[in-house]
Amino acid sequence: MTRKNYLKLNLQHFATFDPDNVMMSDSKDGVIPKSQGTLIMNDVMQNSKIMQLGVYEEMDKQEKEFDYFAEGPGAYWVNEGERIQTSKAKWLKIKMSSKKLGVILPVSREFLQYSVSNFFEQMRPKISEAFYKKFDEAGILNISNPFTQSIEQSVVAAGHVLEGDITGENILQVGDLLLEDDFEANAFISKNQNATALRQATIGEGNLQQPIYDRANNRIDGLPAVNLKSSNLKKGTLYTGDFDQLHYGIPFDISYKIAEEGTISTITDEAGEPINLFEREMVALRATMDVAVMIVKDDAFAKLTPATQPEA
Image 1 (cartoon, rainbow, N blue to C red):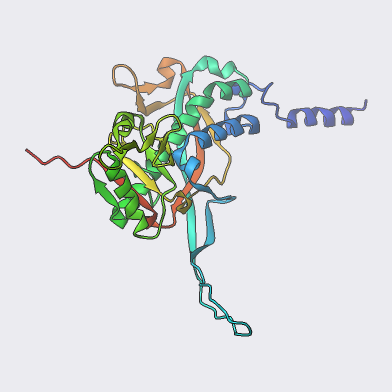
Image 2 (cartoon, rainbow, N blue to C red; image 1 turned 90 degrees about the horizontal axis):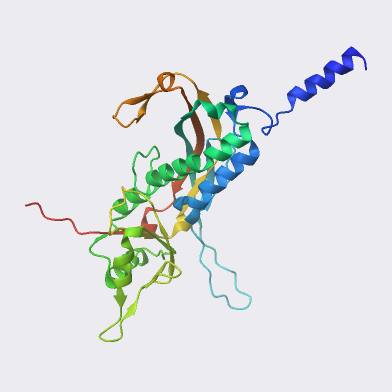
């Protein structure tokens, strides 16, 4: 073999990145390898309530414009030989913009001796949980929200907030708020702590009461319910809506970077002190993904919330 061919083969070898054979110490930044990135993204999409209920929009850049069919043309009865009438349809051009979502996770320095594949297999549950919790709290509850919209903002803007306990009658009434604006609910967002109240909620008259909650299938008034795991969602709160009016997108792959020095101000130890990586012989993984969320119609969502307690 000539020296030229040997160098060519050698360069080809090093140009091929194999996450199973490359150590994290030799690959401290970049895009998470496709196999692990896909698994993390699957975890996020399976656990995020926005992604479970909303409509996915393909995105290949930070912003996407598309036409929304706001009002359709009417149909007409036509006698034989008559000219068919026409009416105007209303199309709205709307824009969905993505924001960068990041998570920083400190780990033992020994993790740098893992292969890239093994490292992200170990970190996968922590990365995905951090992503979907933060995304849902922003898009649903308007907590630390970088977007201009959230379901919480929509129910307030539409005036679709009903105060009261979780009862069969109140669940029906919160659905009626949508019907008055020509929307029909197709799902509920609840939380595990609402289970007792939901089991006690009934509809009917007199002795003909029947439960409105199907615990075995987690359905409220016949509609699927998902439980949001967030301490920021107050017990006794239910969101409902036509989730076809909620859109989301994921334009880019998940990127990462490993830091070996510095202080992480947002993470504290048992004494409440920020984590200093050098002092503790730790490293920190920073993973980022871009996500977008957009609500087409505020009127498509409603909320049942506990009555405000009067001040003493």
